[in-house]
Amino acid sequence: MPIITVDNKKVHIQELNKGAEQTVVMIHGMFSNLSIYYFNIAPILAKHFHVVMFDLKSHGMSERFTDGYDLENMSSDVLALMDALHIEKAHLVGYSFGGLIALKTALKAPNRVEQLVVIEAPDPQDEKARNIIDEYSKEFLEHYVANFTDTTKVQMGKRQMEKNHRMYEFLFNQTSIKADMIKEKHFLTEVNLSQLEASTLLLYGSDSNCRPTGESLNAQIEQAELELIPGDHNIPIQEPALIAETIIHFLSQSLSTPLTQNHG
Image (tube, rainbow, N blue to C red):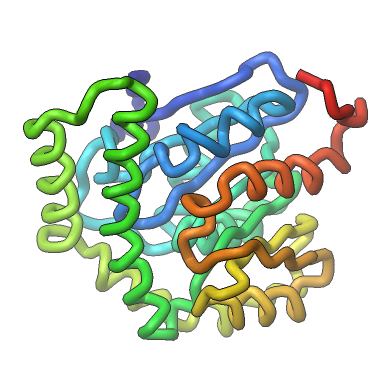
């Protein structure tokens, strides 16, 4: 499991298809890790793109920190990772709070972002939406365990399970993560989304409580398209293949060589 040093922080990363023409950097949500993409979505994207996944600070196998979970710091982490990997420009994919990190990064450094995919980004001022993130973290852990077993053909040991639970307890109880998320409650109303230069794909669950946020973003972002996916906030778990194919179709518009059905 590659651990690299980025701005004196240890970051767990996974890369697929390094030789591809274009790069997709994938940002997971709070209280999860890169495996939300690794098992099902990333391998499909990697048929056509160089895919970079990483664990956010204090998540998965990345180094733990007590603070710095606001969007300014988290977007700086994304750009620093791109610098460390010598990636000049990339497509960004972000899920849940990771979608807000992707939006912030695209607004902050438009010259570094090719196209943008926002999956189920919540409105931070909606308390119900913030609670969804807590609920999602529990479902994510169950999904992670199930996929670990399916992929490795062995059951996750008690020690690994306990390690995961300790990570969540650390995040919930010993960091500024929740306070930093609450500090961002007005993010979507304070930024000028009409200035977003990257063409943007918005993927939201047709039954998701976050769907109104997707519809609002679609109205505000000039180069946006909204696709509704069957399911709720957990669509990466519920419809990973559909999400991957929808992303490929969207991103393929910028490839010099058009994708064919049998490509890769």
